Image (cartoon, rainbow, N blue to C red; front, side, top):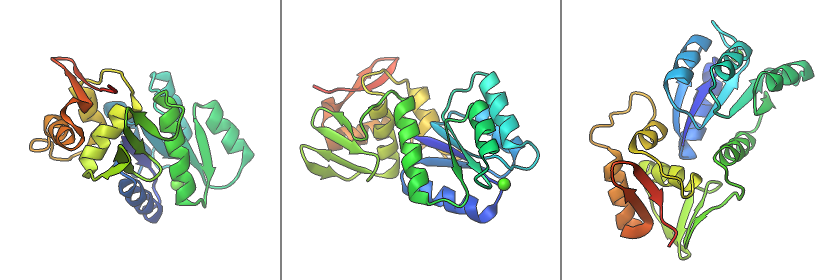
Length: 219
Ligand code: CA
């Protein structure tokens, strides 16, 4: 799962980026509206944390542009104060949720998990596939009750596949959702992570459909 943080306040941006990375997300950061617009159009995000008061292009304008262009990723808007007017404008412009500053990081993480879960069609907070369970709240993966230790990339690959249930996910799509921008992808390809996951979870845990992609195998 990959998240864009559009926030110009350096200390809050750092804190957000760090917290989200620790929670297992690939994170890109934009310090102004122009950069956020570029990333939002070129890259694929599972969610965006969008500050409304951004330099160059403000958050509301950005949000309207993205929605008009058909970008459907969930957007959580950050407002500088608890102004009802800004909240209404934000939601009417296509925001999926909002938080007023200052806020608790735990609450932001919970709201993001819910947005990502809903947008990928999941109802339960815990993702299950046969005896395999992934809990986005704790970042823990268990199989038949025993904890399975995964690296950051392995976790992101598994989390993306499990969020999408039995849907076939192409290699390109997986690649777009597990790395942050500028990450050296050459020696860390999706095939390598899939092979490592199979070694840890059993060969049949992930199905390959030749030339089309991967999906979880519940049987
Ligand atoms: Ca701001």
